[in-house]
Amino acid sequence: MARVLVIDDEQDVVRLIVKVLSGRGHVVQIARDGASALARVKHEPPDVILLDSDLPKIDGAEVCRRIKTDSNTDKIPIVMMTSSYIDIYDIGADGGPDAFVVRPFVREVLANVVERVLFPR
Image (cartoon, rainbow, N blue to C red; front, side, top):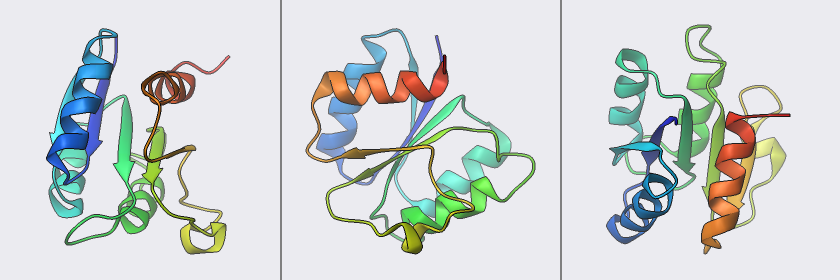
């Protein structure tokens, strides 16, 4: 299926996401902070990114902006996970994610949103 990069520092959340997405046939890779995620995306671009909005070192909005404004990575779909309200102006119209998932999430909703951005109709 697809290579999914999960960028999240909460081990329990990552474990659940890996279980859900690998159960649907996806290969899941993990980055624990924004800085290591950006390095990984540059050297090993995934098919889709599942990105926590609240990360150590570099926050999710900035990680998203850097990926979406780089011509080498701007086509990678990004699903941002958030447990709080994010104003569109905080993310910005340019450099924003392709979709959002609110945490806590329903497993099927998470998988469906990731697959929707991967395989648009």
